Length: 328
Image (cartoon, rainbow, N blue to C red; front, side, top):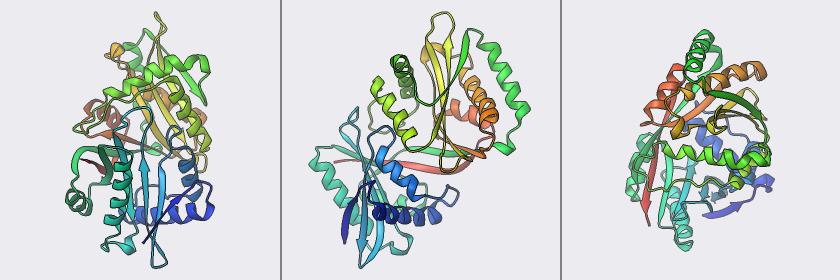
């Protein structure tokens, strides 16, 4: 077996890496959007916020049998490494996953990590494989999709008007692209509100959001060719940023969009800002990006409040995922 690191600039390596992940997607999560090599290169170059995962292509007997990712952060949770292992459906149950895991665990130990985690779909195979290697299920997340053709626009308008009546002290601001440098500190402070989202039993610290990390997130998303749409609520009296919602529209597939952060600062909760922000976003996208067909979102299964908002807006469950973790 050969485990080779794949750089974003290695066109052939990225193509082969993406081909393995696409073969896995087609079998394990056929509801997900197909994996594109060009898009994969963007992820491997930019990551989520400028710290991309290290990618590995695994070959045996002349065939590409698995793809793996190793992800860490320099901002927080420096005890932790997050792992991804995808074994090609035609090469499973031959020990490839075990061998790749051993390779990644060795790297984590060498770096002084004390904990590792990873995600899987809620399926029999990972439920058997992960505990065998000492992992425990620590959280459950649900993938939902909103089909915009099925959205009840009259209901969106009703929810928006109702929320506006409870949020008279706030104004809504629409922003595309990168945030001006002088606004980044306030945006970074508001972004930290996402730490109030449930993490269940995961051994993780709160994420740290200095202004440069928020800027790196925007640079990464735009660098991948996506378009960023942000709506935030600003308190009229104090000027404080109270909450935000962010949607990324794929550059390669502009009919596909992804819900990123939606959060409200604790001091400003109780004014239906979550509903207001998300309905404002829907109304804006209908005006500016009418070609969008679907928006995907993720929530912890225990996040009852945000799940309630998403249900009201027509989001439907398409997949259930498990977050695994073990100490080193």
